[in-house]
Length: 108
Image (cartoon, rainbow, N blue to C red; front, side, top):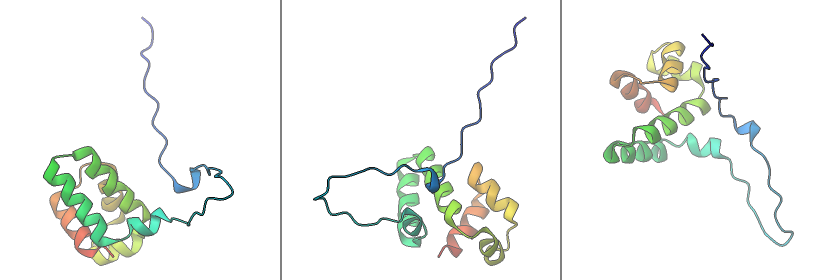
């Protein structure tokens, strides 16, 4: 009996792995730092609320994980009185409502 093929684990997302694109010489561009955007409490809360209202779990999880990936886990753990393991678990899967509330209350 042949061995079953298993899916390889997907690579995690990193802003450092993004490729740069060359633009025409006469185009004026501005630097954009998505990490600073993902730290904005108002923007993230609004996006998460829209995902909940639309019932879009996948987008909610993607925004939630991206937001937590740019946060300082140690400082967040101290503010929320949650363990860092709980915060990392919340990034990966289904966080409890209690964890969601504690983290969103302390977002900076």
